[in-house]
Image: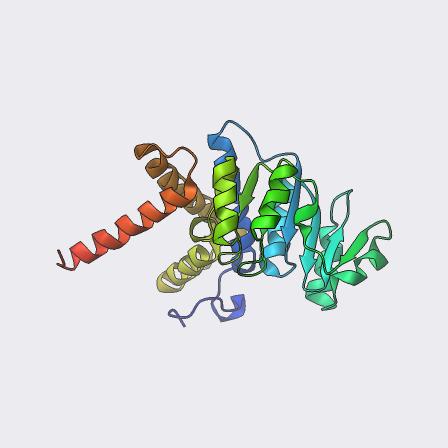
Length: 256
């Protein structure tokens, strides 16, 4: 049991595992803004996807005070300028297993945009949470035109290389997936710790440890940005931090 993660709580799994990736990305984004003298407690955000990662990214953003105005599924994008209703989203996606096109049934003032991505909407923050290569160069240029301040990847490499280049050249704060979406893996490791020690932690305990881990990952990335005079280049910082950890592991095993 202790070598498998993502189990249900009744089988020794960890609470907060479902929320971990979405929550973790928001914690990483919060640290990026904090390091630049700003707070993630206001503004407008768009999120792609509507699975676990997207839903709990939305929930945490709302808890911090951000208005999330859009999310998406493979059929299109739902726009709710008053702010998405998390309970309605969770009812549709987790309970009824329905499409986002039915969201206006619950919130009549909302608009569903068939076959459209959320990146064309005005926003301060963008969180791609759906799938690989979903945000391309053209999308990136539209987001920059609309004054996006921060993009944090919560899926596995959702931004194309061309989009990443556009963000970096424009000075947009960019949280790469290899760092920003580490929350799920982090809580899987916490689950294994709980199994090994025959403990069960509360949601609050797991969430506090997740925040500590994401702060540590952010600080490691930022350290190498500053050390090599690449201010706010979190992709560079994450790459260097990762490469050095692998190199140290190899040296520990006697390879020179």
